[in-house]
Image 1 (cartoon, rainbow, N blue to C red):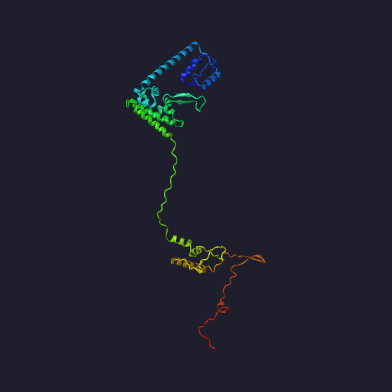
Image 2 (cartoon, helix red, strand yellow):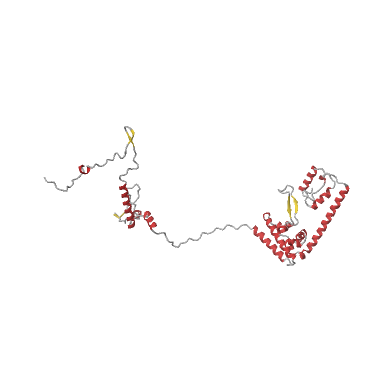
Length: 360
């Protein structure tokens, strides 16, 4: 039974009503417990076999319940007295939490001085009681301190409630320390702390700012230095438009473009206007470039002359003939070596002057 009914006062009332009754379905617990707890008690009682208490033990149990209820009434009277005196004992804590909740917090902590000495993480657990969830949650018990009944926490959405508990517990410790030193008797510090908590929670609940579209910076219209130098001039000479192309692109207004019969692209006009050939300038070549071209041409001639006696790399010793098909052949054999007598006795040889003239 104690695992189902966690609250001490509710447990005493249930025990007082049950007594020695075996059939719990005849007892009404709706004014004390929720329906889930009543169902759990009924099912548990039907599955277990209990023993009937003797008369003497039953009387002692009932007397103990009456004494517990009497002590609870005395505690309520003390809390009411504290609530009436809270404006003088702890004005800042009362301004922060309210007189009733501040009185309960001081009573559970064992005095104002003990509350002032507590760290913030312990203040939020003062007066924590186990709450039975009876299978309605993943955990069987849930701890709830007196701080959870504050209007600052109950008015906060669930996703920001942990933040609110930490803020309120921290500010309660500050207010308790101010009251323990008897400063700010009118509760100005408690009022300021409450406003700070509200502002912090309101700021935390604000939606994030919308993303603003950044405008592009204005373009810089200042003239910038262009690339120059030898490399730039060479590229310009290579891909630049010639005078001939410029003359072709010129078209006289109101006159159809002439056709070039020597090309397949019709409509390409020749650089002739008004029946006269137009003079166009040839592309200028720098002296340095001419010198480089001349040096390259000489190098090509020398390399060609040096490679004149060499055998071509495409020559092969295999030859295909119509008679034998595939046969070995010497590619250098076809080249005939010049004879010594060709210089004097060849048909193309000329006359040679003798050192001494012949006499007849």
